[in-house]
Image (tube, rainbow, N blue to C red; front, top):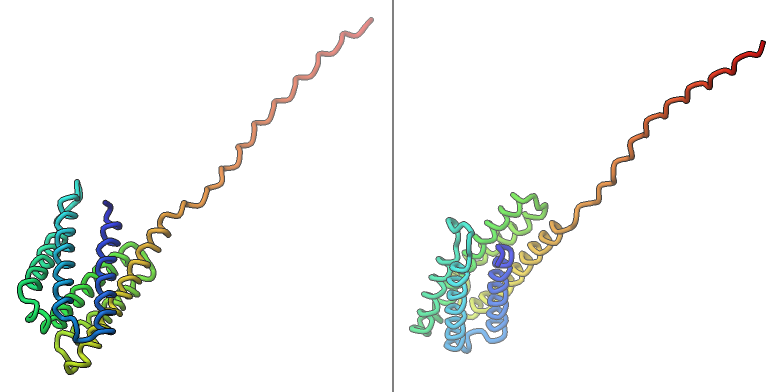
Length: 210
């Protein structure tokens, strides 16, 4: 699996997870907490296993700065915790997901730097999305709202972050499509002029009759 496909798969998982969680929290805030924690636990365990499998399937690729193993371990630990203590996890869910949103913003910053290095002109869109999600994640961590508004704000943050992740995926696919355009055909060089043919020697004169 290529690096670009892994990135799209990773971000698609983040985006769909955040979008689903945001819709659940906006339409049913404060309800179904145990179900939500168990659901997130299942998703976290599955996503952790996916990251570990992706790490070991990278044949012949450098792994010095690879983040699949750390992400896989974090998601596995989070999934086990959500299963073991769902009630405690429910009360801490906004804070935990606030850290997840901040982490996602760091990934966006890294991707924006990669886009800038590759010469993509709209890299600052991804950087702006990273700044927005970082601020929203920090607001979730410090819990600036009361209990009722907090869950609505929690759902709105998840929804916004999921939409921004989809935008980042769109920019990445646009860059790939743009880079894949064939180069313009170079016209063939003009033909070289043919060398001039040498003039024919004059015909010999006929001998004069006496």
